[in-house]
Length: 302
Image 1 (tube, rainbow, N blue to C red):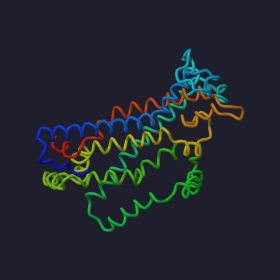
Image 2 (cartoon, rainbow, N blue to C red):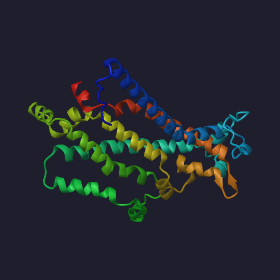
Image 3 (tube, rainbow, N blue to C red):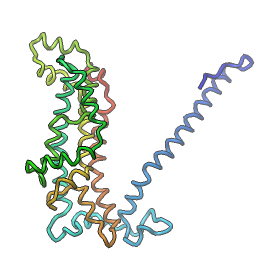
Image 4 (spheres, rainbow, N blue to C red):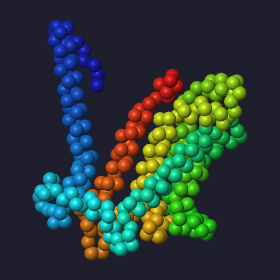
């Protein structure tokens, strides 16, 4: 938008008052548009929260009941302790939570450690074929998951890893994924190379430069990779469905399917369990969000 040209016949005070009024109207319009977008995005979450407190007969009532009366707080302990067809086996969502937490935490450690090491090699070390190898690494993101799903399953089953957590954890320690490598490499590239030279003059090895100098400066990028990895593994449904068969080893995403059967769905319990599963992710984001906005310049000055 072009800047308003002052009118010679208009007093300076009137011109600046008009400009401030236009800016105020623009801010009001922007706020209204963003508010509408925010309400639209959060509406499914509100429906999930409302449904978790409803009786089964109120779930699909017309018109919709947004504030149930009375509130059925018993849906939450009932959803957590009853696991549908597996309730007789003593399997509850506590079991699923422990399994999911084990996979998510170990995978998060593997992704952050391996992706940072690989990214350091691509960003700071000089070796033949570095450029083509990095391009090849990025090219793997263009391969659909469906192409590698069957060969990977055959490989893990042939070495006896089927119905174990190893196919869900070990790959995280073997590079960390092309996207995470790219993210960490770009962050390493933004750090002045003079820091490496100064550390090497003081006697640091390449690993010492990585561990003592660069890694502490990459806290924002490491936090971002860790959050992405944790959220992905916490919500992952396909991989546990493929590799896990024993009911006691299943994850939260698979546990939610216990409320769905051939004879109907317990939507009020499903929404209650889903809300309980989302809470750790929201808490993790609130804890780690301040690292997302930290720049490398501010971190380096510290």
